Length: 584
Image (cartoon, rainbow, N blue to C red; front, side):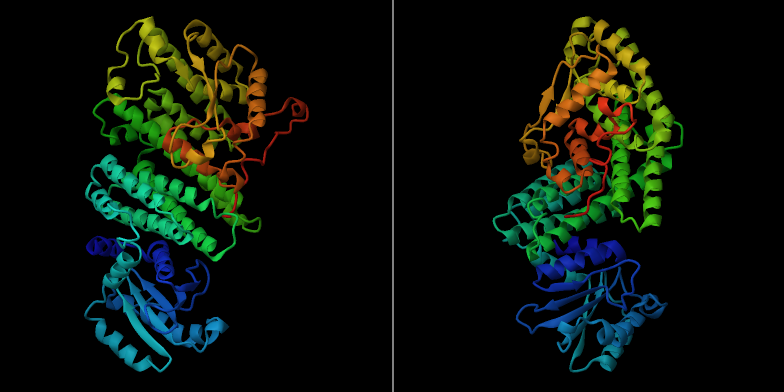
């Protein structure tokens, strides 16, 4: 296991990765971290500062300067970012002027933290530097990859801390990276075993730190192997299970609650990095190429291409919603940052539009399940008015192709989920088989709702005709959270939610929307979800995508005009769900 961790540490970048793990490690060792990495602020050589005892030693102040990989001569004194100038800044500036007053007078240990090793050509300079600057109050230590790996194994991965089999699952996860589904299955077992080991408050803090570390180890190995699919799925899973633990602490202001907040933030940042790396590396290079993504899938048949493309566009949609949320979350005085984030969200929306334009497979879902991905993308595009016409054209194309395939008994969207059954679909070209595999639908009601919201009467009428002439047997349904959803939404532990069935699209658009959104107002369970209470609404979208649940209609309420507001043109609830929330 030490070799696994050692290789992982050597692959880490200095900023955002190695400096994200070190504070958690120090906290797990019993130290109090008083200085964490900051971007855009002067650090005077100190990346991380902590105070406390390691083992049976005296209380000391530990000041860390972090460097990625091996320490070469260039990184020792090649430029202003090199290690030697950083050490000088620690001794001459930080210790004298920036060390917290309550820690002055305590012994100081200046630690060089390396993901790899110190090269032999640098060691004489390091030894000479220590001899010159050591004193009765200042000493130096080298924390290289071997020492970090040993401490991580001792602090995070001890047998008594990890459930039985967890380390085995981590090894199997890493060994099967070329088979992402198998790798993810073992990682799922690992995360669930960690989540289950929560007997005490301290155990919960340890568990969420272990989740963060295991996710980062997996991502490091995936990036090294050039295959981040398993890491992407693992990022969603870890984020959701991490929230399931953290939500109980969100309103507390204790020391353990702060540790929990920092640990969950680490998972969230790792998830964003994995998602960004996947989309930039695997999706963006192909979005503007005709059939580019379809070809890149390397599917054995058209079904493989269809399933993967809808999965990919759903991922892009979720990433865009996170960026949009972050833009709303930024402080009002951060005008430039907010503008950049809004542009980035718009860019992800444009990427989704380019994917649709370049890949005709995205014009007809193969399964009802893919309505979830369609809903995610529509929710992202709806935040920008210039996307309205495109949304209408996409919905119109989906509907027209679905109607044609239904009438001709072709490859119409079905309720089938098993891959082998989807390969054989349509098994028979008769009405009885069609009724059997189209007994229920979330796709056509979704199109009807969006047609009504976008005032697209023609599409709405086509849905009504389709229902009367072909799908009179089909149950059009909408999903709503219920009192058990909070317990199961994030971890997927069991069935939950309530279904509104037999919604009639023969009535007018306004009547349909009034019925549905008044139903939303009559059921308070959505607003009672912890993700909504704390303002982290994209977590609901992630949970729905990961566990394949329809998006709650409450997320569309900002687009609905109440009858009383129609004349004034005001949008009801416009800031209820779209405001960004801060980490509680």
